[in-house]
Amino acid sequence: MAPASLVLPAIRQRGEWLVFKAIMLGAVLTGVLALVIGSQGSSGGVLAIHPATFADIKFYWSWPIFFTGTGLSFGIILMMR
Image (cartoon, rainbow, N blue to C red):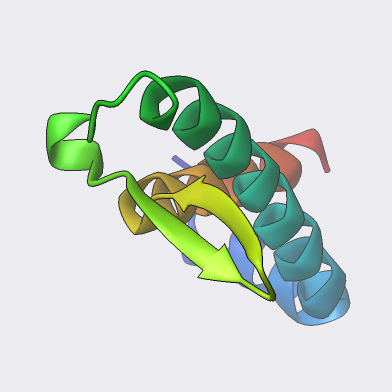
């Protein structure tokens, strides 16, 4: 585990782009997993997949998968630095 003194400068230096990239990857991961699981009629238990509607477009979404995927993507992007 990297000390905070090594991680924090990386976040400050390019933090807004790292977070943006992580959010986009988290959203893609959520969309794919929620589509596969939700289209089968399952809520995924703890994953809490539910149908959502935005601008007359129906899709499946899960906030737990989104936050987990975003955090995982952010960690991987930091490690690739």
